[in-house]
Image 1 (cartoon, helix red, strand yellow):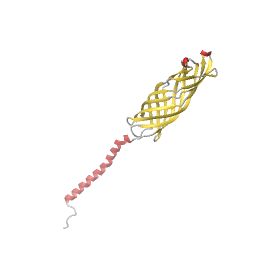
Image 2 (tube, rainbow, N blue to C red):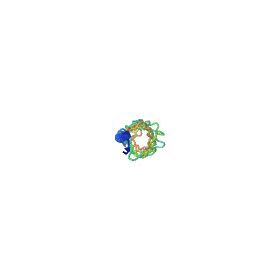
Image 3 (cartoon, rainbow, N blue to C red):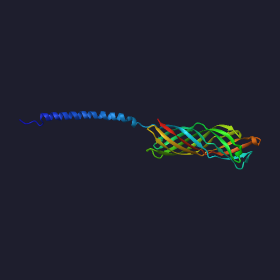
Image 4 (cartoon, rainbow, N blue to C red):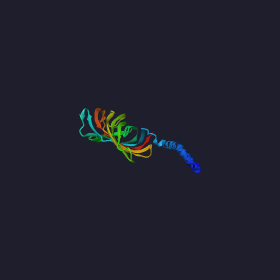
Length: 238
């Protein structure tokens, strides 16, 4: 009689191997699905929206052209006191490496003081204002521990209140001007980041009033403020 091609023991071994392979093949999809579920939170797309807040320092580079009763006052100038306030805003990532920002802040109050031939006048008046900046930012490096950026935009400063000083009936107009900015972000984790931001604003306005010391003569001034706003704080990505 012819010998069987496989012995019984070999056949049993082959069947066991086939069963083990089938079990492994069945287990692989389940394992891959479990890994995908485990990795899903990390692989989820990031929100394009961020909010930020932090202390902001506002320093002015002020100059003024002052007229009294229609006549230029020789040597007259003015300066605005620096302010510290709370800055906050929102950032929207609309394209890889590009984002739009709206920057706001709690309205501070600055004192306008006479300099030059107006130094003896002291405080000319006080102004409470609300600054707002809309800008577009370009991220220079999107990865790494420090991520610098640059940007440009426009500022609108809303004058909320004018208070009299040496000048009575003080009225300061709202102002509009261009903005350049630069800064950097340091990621803390997937949602939180620390940042430092500097915005240079070119801002002009006009002020009118009367001068009781000159018998109520009308006063008019062209004022250049040109503030530098430096903010440091934290941002949160949704």
